[in-house]
Length: 338
Image 1 (cartoon, rainbow, N blue to C red):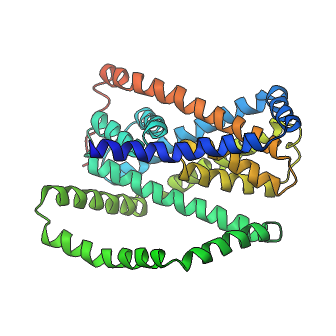
Image 2 (cartoon, rainbow, N blue to C red):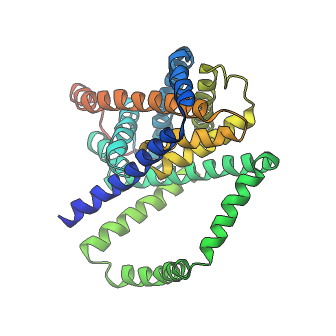
Image 3 (cartoon, one colour):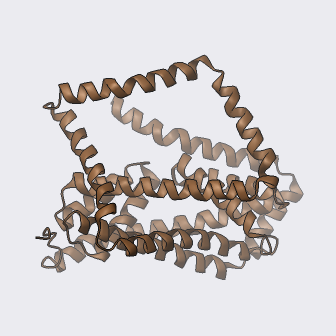
């Protein structure tokens, strides 16, 4: 019961926050701004949205394709279609159960490609770590190249952070976090035979092996090219949507990257970016002179198209993956390389 309540709160709190942001922003719009908001939806050129939909789907396929190289470096042969369907299953599960998608993705590939769960899950965690590094690099580059425009925004965020540093509670939590490191190491060493501790240790080892596999893979250059392609498509599908609205079609690359960074962090902080994503896009584009209602509409258009793609292809993957592997049982062997 307690576990179910915790899971419910993990889902309900961030989604409630997203809904609160949307309702608050909408209520702050006057009648003229609301009319402009709905006009943007009606007049949008959805050809560009459809193109972004296709680019997003391609990026997810390449993510599955890239995963293949990492698993090969760990000693397992997999098939691109299974990898892609597992990726899509992970995305759709994340929309409903935050952070559970990675588990579902690992479980799917483990079941049909006969790969130990700990290893498949570890490879996903290492992949996420790499994605975080890429996103932080894009964020840092965006801020540095546009500091004159984003200076006030950065200063406000920095001042807010410094104020929080003065909180005694934050210092206590920081000290406890530092203390937790040696305590955790001691517990792991002392109670390694415990079933629960052993499972955690296996996951940590899987993560470490996943990171090592990136360094030792034979087709490392293909892995790097795939990573570049994934992020280029992420930015591209975001940018393409700007052409859907006349008011945003001529915005600079700087505005695109600012919106992309804020939107990405909104998705990280709120499951699926529900509510928070359009608000983040709106706030980012206001800096570049775009009316709030226009940025709000653009954010919803981008969010809805990409979420629809995940729901559609994630759902199809859930249905088709067991059918595909039943028909091709001789293909999905999952036999380790010798």
